[in-house]
Length: 150
Ligand SMILES: [Zn+2]
Ligand SMILES: [Zn+2]
Image (cartoon, rainbow, N blue to C red):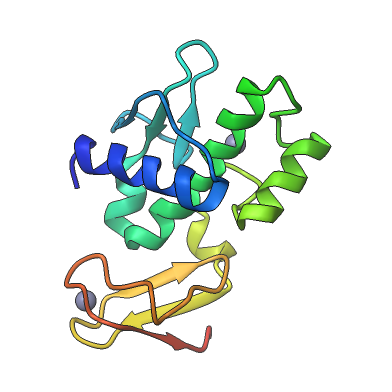
């Protein structure tokens, strides 16, 4: 996935899940180390850690984007855009976003659901349940099946 595809994905999530328009830039930043993504207060851009996508696929990427878009829209609306704010808690709950910027190392330990691709057998971990009739494997486009977490 390149920056153009990421930009298109962020715009689509903003439209479909938030009912709003994302008017700034989203791009990958490989230098991000401790978080999956970052919202920049100055430029209003969103940076995404490509390692999260490489390790956990599109489902994890969507979680990060939703989370950063919560910061984005609340900040632009001059509402409480920080993790501890009531506005932030309410919006992240409404759109199904994780409440914290996913730290890359501990994503696996926080995941409640594990899915496996029925075609290429890649495993995906996710904090929230996914709709397996809509979500496809990020590598081959195959169907995902939920497996029980050990
Ligand atoms: Zn955050
Ligand atoms: Zn697959």
